[in-house]
Length: 201
Image (tube, rainbow, N blue to C red):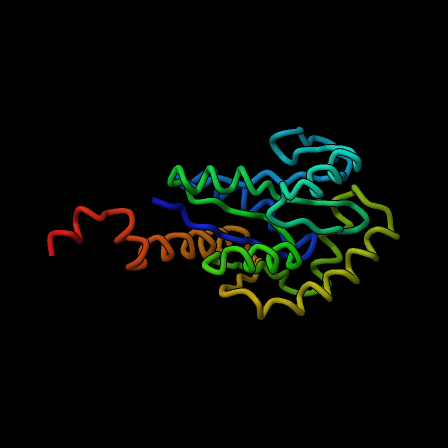
């Protein structure tokens, strides 16, 4: 039995991380892939929980060894997903959720075309700007770069099967959970997870 693979992508500040954390906490048998990154930890972030933090030399060595299912350079930092970890979790029957950007999503779909893509949109660019400024973690120059990148990222929304507009956190979380639930109820998924039932007919 192989677990499902979900991809959640969004521009920085759209609320992706908050939604994903809430979803993981309330959804059985759904595990979050912890990305590797060369980005320094933000206040409150914990190595191994939020990201696998590492220096550029180690990241490059893993990348060159083919250890990453996908990797991308975002805002000057490298991010990557462990190919081995994903394979092991899916083989154990766990559904896996990747919280990555659109570039990484494209790489994952090349390897796993059955991956289910979900894109989180902010309600407007004005709201996105307010959220980025409200974080208090980035200076004005970084925020401007993130806003420019957000416009480019949003152009790739058509590459994803599902789109959720995060205007209200509770509503968006319920919609995200609905996508996970619906994917688990497809015929192919049910037949794989309950073969003894379908073998009777």
